Image 1 (cartoon, one colour):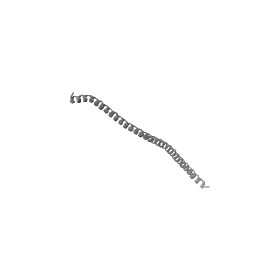
Image 2 (spheres, helix red, strand yellow):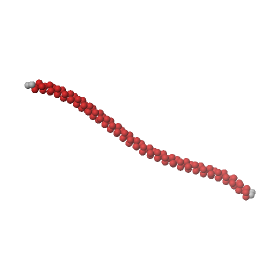
Image 3 (cartoon, helix red, strand yellow):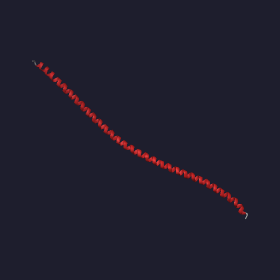
Image 4 (cartoon, one colour):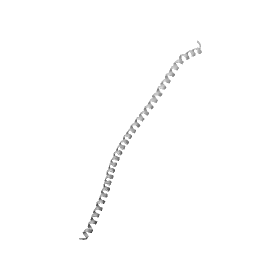
Length: 118
């Protein structure tokens, strides 16, 4: 067996071994990449969860403020209606009072000439 022949036979034996090592190394590299991608996805998911919690808390605050404003608005509306009713009643009483004053003047003016002759 010549030296060249020996090298060729050795290359045939080593070649499948190297191919298997390369395949395994490639598989390990792929798994490591997937692991890194999963870690990154987990970080993003945790970040989104934290952001969601903050936004949920803000939504609760806004909803609480809205409900308070709604309650206050109803209270102010009710008070304004009551005030408007009072003002309308005052207007009606004023008109009625003016009628009474006019009636009293008419009676007084009618009675004064009669009293003036006594």
